[in-house]
Image (cartoon, rainbow, N blue to C red; front, side, top):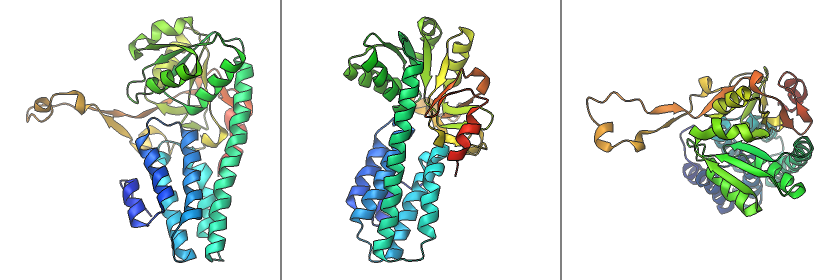
Amino acid sequence: MTQPNVSHSDICERYKLPEGTKRILHEIANSSPLGTSVVINLFAEALKTLSEETAANSGRELISQGVALLDYFEHTRGQYTAAVDNCFRPCHRNLTGIENETMANVRRVLLTCAQQLQEERIVRIKALIDHAAKYLAGARRLLLYDYSSTVMSITRELLRQECKLELVASESRTADGGRPIVEEASKMGCKVRYIPDAAIAQAIQDCDGVLVGVETVFLDGSFSNTVGTLGVAIHAKHFEIPFLPATESVKASPNRDHAPDNIQVKKDMRTLLTTSLVHSENARIDTSYPAIEIVPGNLVTAYLTEYGTLGPANIWAVARGSVT
């Protein structure tokens, strides 16, 4: 099994992964931020290129490459979201349970897994976008916090239907998640207002709703997302603005294994301080903070899903079938 602190370069070198797979892992590692749904698709593409381009000398070696890749997925983006485990665990089972270890058969298992994941994702996303666009029809102004590929797809469909839509994008400073929203919205021809996080309370009052992405949605109707999302949800509740997380059912989890308290994913603000201050023997400064946080279900107006609009009390009953 790969180790959590091993980089994509180490994995590629250790297991002699093909150039196409290397390029995809490099893209994921160096393109930030990327929405979970997009990353899942790129992970599937990495499996596909492995099956097509591997230089493995045997089926057993190809199995080792595939398992190493799946472990890498789990130890990177899988720290943040249950979607990685839900999507790729069946592939892991199929790969490690192969009886016929010929190269042709192992390639077939990998390729089938990748294609199935990508095809199912297309169906889910299309259904989610269609349901969300109907629910949000007529919205004039929406506030978006942190980049989400799913949220941007919903926005694109709303713009196709209603050219007067305006977006308010908060900077989402900890992840720099506002900048790509502004860039992508501008390319769509959408009017967009870019604000500092400190101005959310003022800007949210003139919005018809708040759209955010989801890392993992839990049994009790709560969900995890980029730190700062909880503050936006509290503002929305206070000003009675609909707070609408958009999520595929594959992001559901029955437990808190992917909750911030369990995974201890932290970031650091040390680079914002002077070197002399940070390295001072007398300095007692903690610059770490959690990268993601939990938003309780009582702050959620409704989840936008491929099954339609679901209340926080109902989402698990519908999404549980997607949990492997």
